[in-house]
Length: 530
View 1 (cartoon, rainbow, N blue to C red):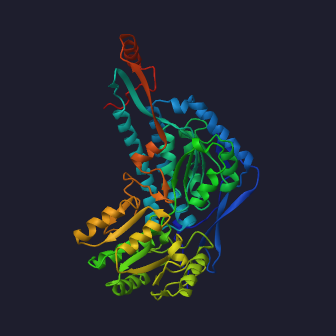
View 2 (view 1 turned 30 degrees about the vertical axis):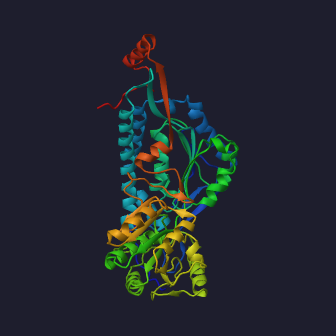
View 3 (view 1 turned 45 degrees about the vertical axis):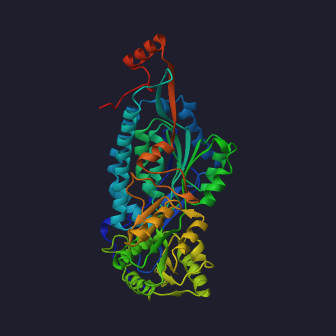
């Protein structure tokens, strides 16, 4: 695959290195005097291909990890710290201040999203804007939650003022494919509910958090947000071994999640909020609108090069239409434009992981050795930083591409005769996030939907799998997720119901009235009645 070098627009050129010399702990941007890790982009800045050096980040060790944990632990102070006891309105004010400061860094972050992970310009802009919107949506939902919990309930002669309270210290580990949006889908609800956090950015997409370090420092009280850099296992292992982490919030894979939580000495105390891997299938029925199905399957398989847990990673196509589907799907795949993220009309971009093309090639070779063929002409063509999406047919259960979450540009197609075949495969799968079904006959669709909703957590009718809108639940079964992320549900994932109970006596009622009148309690409050 020959890639023609194109001139990089001036606005997106790397003219200076971003050397992140500090980490955030106890409200201080502390200068690091030790080793640094170089951050490279697989996008070349030169005529002859070579990775581009973007900057450096601190390579912190165990001592710094424990220092950050102690900072978060002290800030929470067993639930007595400033942040967990703060009025809802005051925490929201801090979050609004952060969002306002964040908006001033849009251009810097969008540029780094393109260079660090190869996300297209429109998608990088969308990720930033969507994240800001997510923050404000979370704020509004929290206000509504405050309104809903403002009243006292009475049952069996007992009044109760029920609210949601924080869980404690959160270890937050974000993913590289959405290093801003999905990371903040963990961090923002965790913070606004009164938890404190130790946050480690992903390996790829690490520098794009640098423009926000001062915003974190300026917007939140000391120790509420602590940001550390380095290898996940090196930092997370000693943190977890202390037993001081109350919530593990991670978006990644189940192997990493299991390894990290295994270090916690009190697993019964550990709340898990995990977004993990998936193998989302598309099921194309014989009566499907084929044009629509192909367009949606193409978008679902190739958006951000298939590097999404919500990507469509396997296509089940009815035997009556599989030949036509393959022909048109392969042609449309070959028509997709590859280039750098800022190129007009580009759909396929360099892969951020240097070893990913070789891994995808392994999957292709394995499939071919077991009877599959590449059915699109460009499939498998390789450059220094990319491998063109290969459509493989027929795929079978003994192939690695059938079993593994490929998380990259390769799409297996399976022909089926009986709808029970894909249903059985999904039931046997370790994953259960989403499915896309394409068809029109309601008598066929109805029992299929009824079965699928018990195998996955989102059934997409005649549309690709996706995360948004962010107000809808985002979760999964089996190895795909623990807890639910979304604007509404994430606030609940990072909190617990807690309440004040009071017997209905004249003595107690007088005290309650005095508490409400004088507004001396941050818990018994009604900040957002209007």
